[in-house]
Image (cartoon, rainbow, N blue to C red; front, side, top):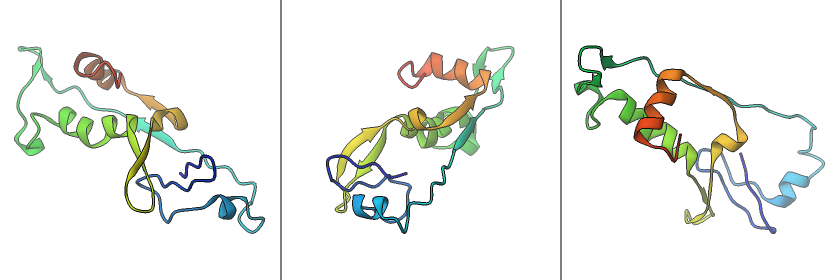
Length: 120
């Protein structure tokens, strides 16, 4: 995904080569094709039913558990994705969820509402 503003070139951190406004508007690249990206965000229940808490999961180290690890690697970074210029400097922040078709499982939504109301 490429984001352009006021004739500036920017690159989404996970995209390929930087695309300029001229390239984007070129008849050679304008195909009329639209792409939809769908995110399916789900985490299984991890709570110990007797404690009503998630116990430490060693395999998720250094995080406490897999919910926390994936949150730091995926869910939060997508809410505050960095827009970089050609020198790797941050020129903006975008919420990728605004541009995705997505669904979130109920267990994950409950976890997010409890641990990060901003991303929730």
